[in-house]
Length: 507
Ligand SMILES: [Zn+2]
Image (cartoon, rainbow, N blue to C red; front, side):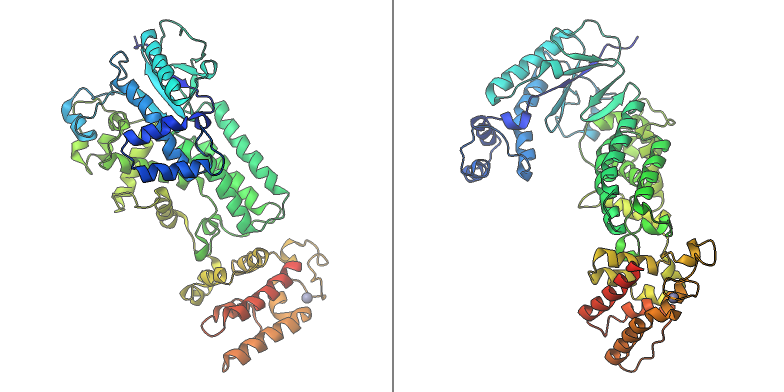
């Protein structure tokens, strides 16, 4: 039989707004903040109107201050002998605790906080009662308020008695620190669907706007990455969802345009000829590696007790002391821990750094992975290696072109500009808008009489500015024009590029 155990997610009403300032400053004093610092925070939070409670929303300090304000509550819960808490697997062994925790740190888990979410563990009704009592004390001091009817209990296994206060009870799944989780550590299907639908909806609002490729890529970064980072760094993500999210990205990027540039180029950095299109699978893999590297790092965190069971076997060659007979281990499965162990093992086996990058975390792991596994150079680099030497795309970005014009150049350089010769079915369809010849890319750049004056003026301009150089009107010249940056000043170039870009865009 499984031990009856429940997680309680306590709902705090308007947690940030309710923090009493007197209480807050007392807390800061106890934490050892100096007078000047406290009065500075006071100044920040009051401005002209003397608010008596609340942590200013949107102020980057407020998150940290709120965490400090909440700490006395968590501390009281941790110190309360009437709340037994959960002993993690292996937590009873001193040698393992010495390895994972700080000296004298208690392995028992009683309360976990993330911003204003507080989750506690309860084995019986007495634990609940005592925890509620701690909240009442905290509320009296800080001005906080518990919403019992919005508080949720997640019964992980058989439960003995119903709680003695009005709370929602979940048996199949709950939202744990902001992430929906079921009994098997997975996001329930309907929650996954909700997540995907909400991403689709957010992106959908941008469809009607006439955005350039770069702008669309930015929209994707904002709505796909931001809404998935936290969730999928803490839980597994089924492959079908990864595929679906990627499809959403690709579809939105191109919208009504024909897809002409390889996705493996698009996922690269902009200076390398990509558009930084999110690559969902790699993004998730980078979270896994991040997780694995944290296990190997010296950081003291209690989840390591749980993670070691699934991860220590695979990662033991990188840190033999992780491997202990004191905790059970399992080597197979498709859980978050197993995925993390496998991704980290691959990462380290490829000679990649063991420590997390200093600033930020996954972005550089992400880029490492993209450049190792996916990125393909733009076609223009492959066809004209000289452009690669000159870092053509970096230069293109430096020109600061209007985004539409950049698009044209970007697609042109990637051989991704569709002309009528490609989409037309009949000879009439394929005809140039300006003359009777077939409208191929080569035609536009080298033959079409309509473009003659523009091209001639461009070529003349380059020849007279640069001097002894013989530039012909041909396809490569167009790209080449932008590349003579050593001798032309960017403003001149910019005007040329803009002129041409606008011209082609109109076509
Ligand atoms: Zn023509």
